[in-house]
Image (cartoon, rainbow, N blue to C red):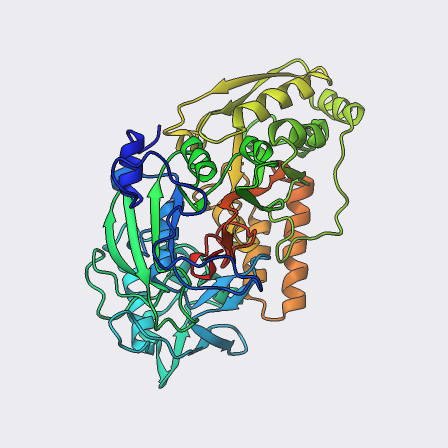
Length: 518
């Protein structure tokens, strides 16, 4: 349900005149300083930019270390910067840190900071970075997402090592440490930061107003180290998917986050809207719990993977807006082994393996939910495909509100999806013995040991080989049937320039400081 109770309220929240009957595609949100189309296509300053996201009600926040929702991340991205961010392949790239280096065993990292100003006019210092780490790691803070990832930091041994150099000591070797700093909940705040309602960041925008569940308004910060934004004002608003699509087509918004394949298909001939499609940027899967019968037998998990008609799943469930999966996370990302042959459907081989395991005469169930688009449809279609081998699969649906928690304890199969993240972070979060979100029940001490070795290996080539070995094990024996990688679809007004398709959770995703209006 849309957060806007009626059209008048939507117009009021977006800054339109009360009682306006419509916003035209040309003038929507342009403001008095909006640029006309530039014949040379050069960026122009001015105008108002309105971005629509799924809202989170009163749970929304602008605390960069407590961000949990996409709308939270968009707001904090506007107000703050990270030391390091991630490119489209999930490799680390410089932001507030110009460069970095480690000692021989990756237990100490030195980051050289660039010249940057906070919104209060004070320069960025190593003390700000150390204060940020201390705030993230504060044991009294229970909502700081980056706490577990950055728990490797030994804060007592970390220090200022020069005017613009911060030295970060680690409790154990971590060759992937820079990439950790490009993940959720790691933005740098000022050492003067005390009240989340009064953010002190280095971002391209400064806060004007924020109402959780309703609207966020920010203005361009002209002293931003990366040149500042082009638009005068940024508004980030809450709305549901249908409302986002309608607003884009009516010229009432410039950006719509996470649009549906149906929307992408219906606007192909609409000259007022463009779809930014980052190919195969997320993952959809069916998980099989390897710690329960019959999936404690690797032959059974392999049989199920052979039953999937991946092309049909992508064509039907994703409306063709995606690419087939090969039972490994991170297609196209750093450390993804492209040389592993694509798994294809083989019903006869699957039937043989299932018969040998004594599974054909049993009824198994997939636990799914409407919590994510495509979950129920994929589970239903896969059940039909499994029937081709004489297997009975029942689809059971659960409550959307608690699905991801319930899935950890209910059923022997379930629906699963993941947004973009580094492959090491995915393995760490979901495939280790002690991983909190190990939906496939994959627990192998030898796998854990290889992962620990990979994470501490400083030689890039050797590290890549170790991650490749881990991915091969997951492909051959794991409980992930990753059947498809949906395209990441965002919508923009045809007036918007400077924004490109990018996977979620990367530097160029929802990056409004580079957007300008033609």
